[in-house]
Length: 267
Image 1 (cartoon, helix red, strand yellow):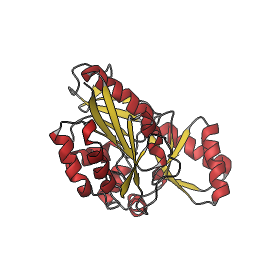
Image 2 (cartoon, rainbow, N blue to C red):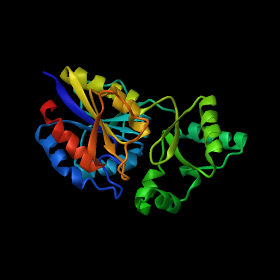
Image 3 (cartoon, one colour):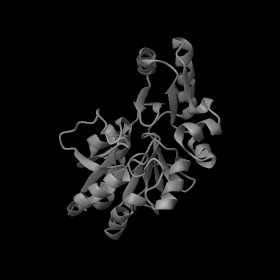
């Protein structure tokens, strides 16, 4: 018998634009009742995700900063992943360290002359204002380990030249609420690795993956049941066009709830 896990994005997916998951609570309760693991897979930092894991009541592994690392609570699986434990987790690092990413980001700015501004350039107050966070949440958002969110102060031509320079430097970029520069990692690679651990523990595993943006595409490509929810303006991410994709009618957590109940026979 197959076991199901849910791997979900946070911002704009399980969380609405006020960072609330209340609309999804009935579906979260159903998953808890059926003992279905919920894995957060977000562009957020470890510190941010730990906060929401506590609020939602999650205890399992999670994926940070667009697949930069997988954090597995010590003792969660009956086997060791081979990674050294620290801070209560076995951590599988898939991305480049933040210091290397920042160095590359600043070099690209110097080389191209294109105006871009990363979280490392911003005060806590600026991050809070741009992301709609409280000051405490913005402080957590600045605790980057594996990627750098950034904004452009340029028109479209400059943006495309900057993104090309990122790939020319051997890095990758993606887009959620912000642009991100990162190493050779993405949400899909991290989800694939974690699914392998679940299969080692339980046997065959099916994955329901839920997202809303371009940076969720690699995750959705890895899923048995990929789900796209509407953005807050009611649109779907145009870059996500998988043939097996379920498009939920609801926006953010409303769509999340809808999808889980629609797929309840798979749980």
